[in-house]
Image (tube, rainbow, N blue to C red; front, side, top):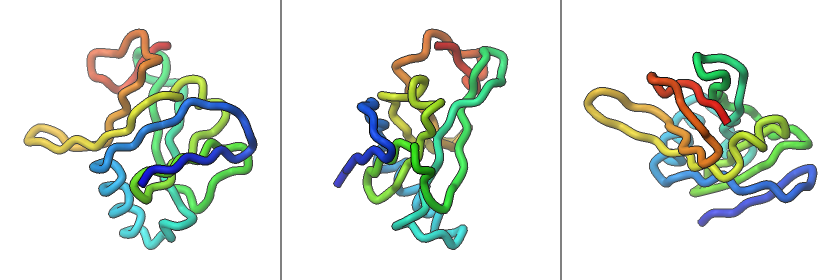
Amino acid sequence: MSTESVQGGGDDPAIEVTPDAAAEALSLLEGEGLDTDEAGLRLFVQQGGCAGLSYGMRFDDEPEPDDLVVEHHGLRVFVDPASRNYIGGSKLDYESGLQAAGFHVENPNVVSECGCGESFRT
């Protein structure tokens, strides 16, 4: 079941989370000893990388008052107000394979990405 709530108001586009991404993040949260009912994955944008902006992720105990809080498949995702314009409407996925494994953001707002896929422009 997927739910979306916005703390602090606003009509922001949703962030989608795939079942694979939610399962992996929940496993990591639990491994850190965090309460999955309150804690979540913070997804944000920061300056850096060869294209100008890059994604960041970390676990937080709880959302900030102005965060967009989205829940998919039991995972809570927190997005700060400054990052909303850059990643609204994105999909968070987890990919595993022989050459690489990790979280990947599919962002419809991206105009171009760098060659290594670590940074982007909007």
